[in-house]
Image (cartoon, rainbow, N blue to C red; front, top):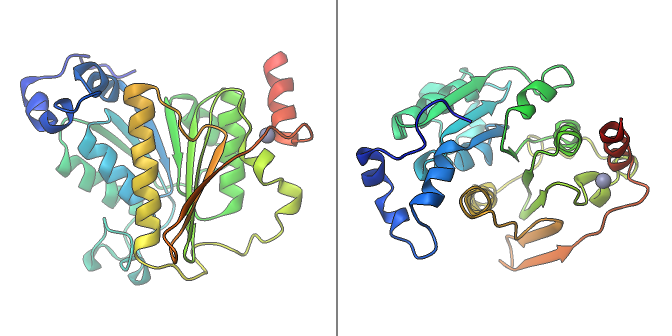
Amino acid sequence: MLEHDLELTESEMHLYSRQILLDGWDIEAQEKLKLANVLIVGCGGIGCTTAELLARAGVGKISLIDADTVEISNLQRQIAYVAQDVGFYKSEILAKRLQTINPFIQVESYTSKLDENNAQALIAQQDLVLDGCDNFTTRYLVNHICTQLHIPLISASAIGFQGQLFMVDGDSACYECLFPKAQQHNESLRCADSGVLATTPNVMASLQAHHALLYLGLAKTPLKQKLMLWDGLTMKQRILAFEKDRDCTNCQASHTANAD
Ligand SMILES: [Zn+2]
């Protein structure tokens, strides 16, 4: 939890007034946002939009991790960056932008890759983790640590015209229950290497940020153990429930770890 006061200042009340006016979203919900610690994994097409929406909405502390620097080919969809940012670390540029957008929040940035060495310590401090990374190795690692530490995870991805979104929380089924690691051979299928329309990651990021606000402010989990699929060509959305896989190595490992 953050060191600063729970109560919203007059300036914060003014900034978030349109949100506080909402039926079903009151000062209490806004104060819960202020107290929240959220980690955003990946500051690419999904992460930069999710981060900006959460900063504007008033999430109290946002941590950003991404080892990449801005490239020209990112500018087509990664809305936080401009041409002058090319060559600079994404997480640092994005952190500065968030702080300019909302000076009332705390922002931290990490220019390292999330890996076995730093994931546990970083994720343990969070109330919620939002994954928008572009590779399966990181995605499985985030899922693993979140399951082990019982930190809720909302994961979004966009490849081609397709988008996916789901939530893992508590004892729910995990990412590996849904996509067993052993069956996932296509590590080369990364957002970085395949085509993606400017809008697709931004649609998925908006949905991810929206779900994060529902969870942090209102404790709602509409996509817990559910997979939302968004098709960018037909614009159809489907939500599929998925079950815990009894053979899931990740769930078994987390269960053993928690029983120790
Ligand atoms: Zn599992």
